[in-house]
Length: 88
Image (cartoon, rainbow, N blue to C red; front, side, top):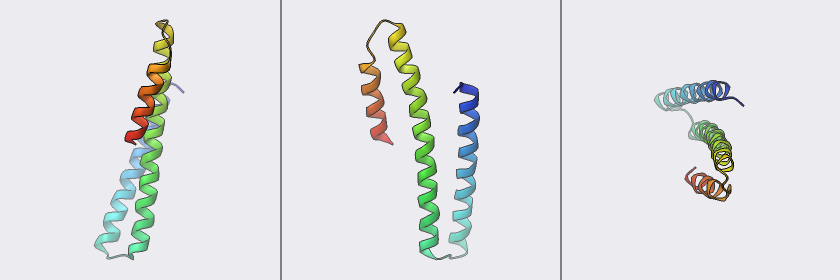
């Protein structure tokens, strides 16, 4: 996936997450049922996780490509990607 297409996809996903956050705020203001709020929060968390995974995939592709073009091994890039995955 090219960077422009990925950037648009990520921005679209983040806009939806932003809308979900506003929706949760309204639910709290309206004293909605806690279970419904939790369901929406779980959906937001899953959406944020998907954005993170897309960004990590982009990083991995670039890092491995850079390592290979430099005549190096991809192991360092992969290890760093695994470390970053732990931060998600």
